Length: 307
Image 1 (cartoon, helix red, strand yellow):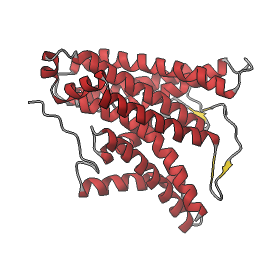
Image 2 (tube, helix red, strand yellow; image 1 turned 90 degrees about the vertical axis):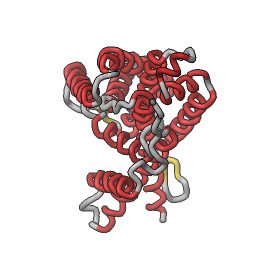
Image 3 (cartoon, one colour; image 1 turned 120 degrees about the vertical axis):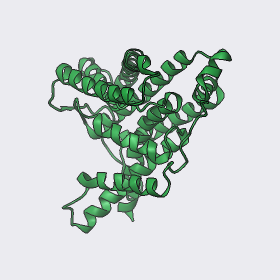
Image 4 (cartoon, one colour; image 1 turned 45 degrees about the horizontal axis):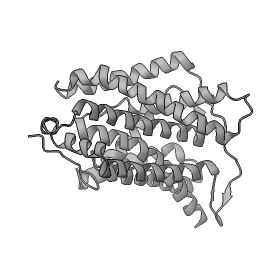
């Protein structure tokens, strides 16, 4: 029983990180019908920038909490500027092009960012500093680290704030209007270009936060670290219903739970020969099953009327 509860905790932590990245995918898709496959690399840039800043401040004598408070807004700002530039330079000129063109461009941007990161930070993996206490918190059998607890708390707070932003602010109303019909929204005084740029910036901030969480949880960073989390987060967005914000959260958490529990079960029945390295089997098997039974995702794909 304790092992199962531990797997649930690990799955929720993993799913929380997937959910943050999946929200960026689903927000962009909901407004411009674009799958930004470079989103995983934005996560990587956030983690690498955080690594660089922490390394530069490592001899300053600051506590781990203070280093986090300084590093987080810097990583978010760099990723926000990066995604803003990507949208303006790579995606905006192709907004009215056939859908294949921006899709290929997104893949090209992804490879470009990976290559630039490899040149800047070198290809070898680097240890991410442990900023928070390492002593695990005993929950009466299962344990959770301070880093994992912070991931769960920060993710919950961010998701609540994002839902409030989308549902209760002027920007959120503009985003929903642009998603429904950008031409009509423009006639009502909304600037679709600004809304789309803001959406990319918000997605980048979430990706940067997820990148720092990923690096802190696994203790390493490298130039290719964003590929698999980005792919999994896209899977989570599709699983919950692409374009559906609550669906992205549900899909991310469910995917994390499926991976953690499935990998633990596989490890048990094989005596530890198979385990976490085969977690992807369960993640993509769950995706195939859900899309076979419910092609629009668990909560339904959000389809805007652009007529």
